[in-house]
Image (cartoon, rainbow, N blue to C red; front, side):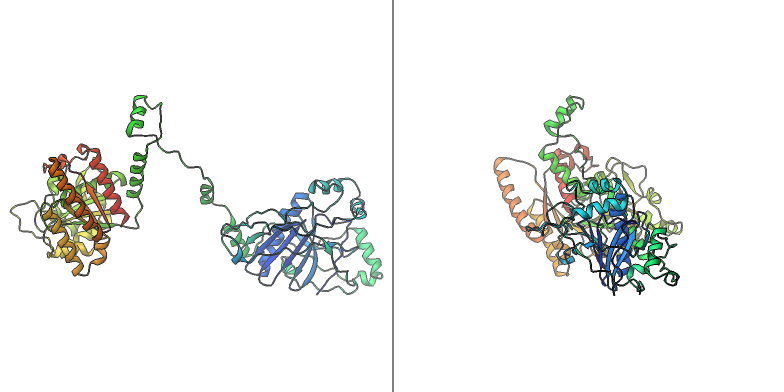
Length: 584
């Protein structure tokens, strides 16, 4: 269906040229003086609403007045006038036809690149056909002065005597996809060539407006000037024709009021996250704390803030791995069936490293059946309560709602390392025994109050509490010294777990090998060969192997002070902690 395609140029100038094509699938193409846009919406109404809003912002507001719009939708061709505030009315049915721009070439969504930026093709389209000089002067006379002619020249500075825009490289249209979460991506405009608009049909039989644009909210009709109404009356044959009611024009509020459009507008509204992501300036790295760079910084009282060296940067990267966020509480089990296999030392040093770099929320739990030594390696505490005492009071604590602070009287805080220790039974006269049922009764509340649990197991793989610990483990750590007997015990543990169907937890395990003390040259060579052989074996059986150097500060058997360890030892435990967290 077609309607009158001419307009009254005394009321609405023909500059800028605006053409819209709306398809039944909810997409629309818009050309504004050669600049092309594509809208993709869920339906025709939303595409119309978004097109009107875009024209008001991109065409009417820059020139400060209403603009003439030629539209084509599934119901036919239409002439509208869109004001800067988004109000829509029917164009006056008068005068001469204008020329339409060609419809922009559209890109299918599947052809768009990832960043929604469309590259310009190598060949340009046909040069735009300039308006005739008579048309330019007629435009100036219709406005009645010099003002609008100057406005047209300002809008097209490269063509001062023509309304048409200058030649530009042809690019694909800007795509405004309302069916996706991303907003419009601005791209340069495309040069358009004007083509004649079909001649107007008879005004004696006006056709009802059934287009998608007619379904916009209706506003108070906007009366044409008296001169226009007089000409219409004379052309329609007197009072009888003039008595026919004028069709009510449509209007659009400044912002579309439909629920779908409101949701789409909200989806395109920038948020705080968008603002923060737009700041691509990286925070400067902290100055060097170690090495000669750190020493110079200390000697200069901070005036020489040198950048950290490669080694310090590697350590900082390991710390970031240790601080990786976890999706809930995690349980780490340290095991080796042989006594003296460095299980207790391993669990203490891992817990201390995790506590320092993760800021707390870490508990080391001695899960021996009767008595373990983890409590003896801890800093001195003002109480001697153990897991047995916690088990005895657990029901009472649960009745009041278990909180982290409620466990302070049972946990031995290691304040310098930001973690706690739940010791095993230390009463030599006690007959209490931790079995699998007791372990689970304690594990549930502890996992609710701590982010990371490190469990020190006993030496009996067949004990029910040992088996229960393996069943809840998120990560297995196999501890061993670089000795034949302890390494063979660790290998036997791996074989037993595989036979019991625990292949997955073994494959994800981390092996921590503690080196022997340095001795003579011959012994060092033998130890080096043993270390390499053990490394190859456990590297093929577990996910990662970390070798920790021998440190005399860990040998005495008394309370462990991480500050007394050598730098190389602390770095090795940092590597071990990073390897463990990577598997959680």
